[in-house]
Image (tube, rainbow, N blue to C red; front, side, top):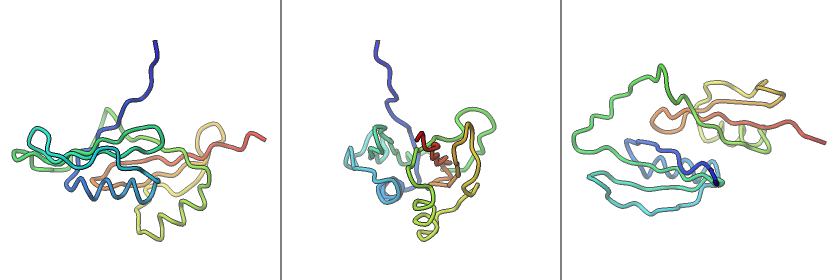
Length: 129
């Protein structure tokens, strides 16, 4: 039985803004052009091998922020040059909630906010050589 991550789901105030964030900062590729699905705009972007499905608000949804106390907290994206991506994100005005520093098992990690308060952990694994 083969198992792999299928997708991450992002509910967005503006799906195109969210899609552009992943395309601009993480070399994302448009995977599904924007369509309407069950009363909401829908678009998806491929980042690495993972599809990020981005859905807009439906007519009856308010978009009120609710903090996550339990459940999915963030998702991680592996990078190969933390210094370079940090500089690029800083220049673009992306908010860091944790600047690059020590992570688990020798990694370097940082946390940023994507559109709609989605929390992303950037991870640079230690050089194996």
